Image (cartoon, rainbow, N blue to C red; front, side, top):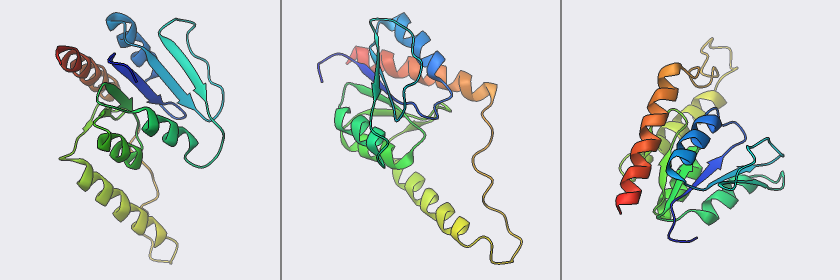
Length: 158
């Protein structure tokens, strides 16, 4: 990548694409929207749509391969966040929570624990850990906008 700040979006299930475009236009930051199927994006010189194969982790591989210290990655995928942090990228969840080197270990561990708990469901014990994440809220959208704005400003300052 170049020395320019660049936003990469893991877009297949991203609920904040419109917010990303809004902030990107304000700061003139290019955005690459990566998905396994064609999705609608604004026709604008700052927005690039990349459609990858439907292979397992194809979108994640593209994003991780293009992540560097001038990248802002938008993803809810904890394992992709971990990969991008290894490339010194800034990583933000759609709920506005930054993933950092200090927090990613516990996020990966919590993900593994929940996967283990879900694997044990259905054994007749009545427990239900399969509900998924909490619904996306207006406060999440606001937090995301603030975090993305702050991250761009920080990267622009160098």
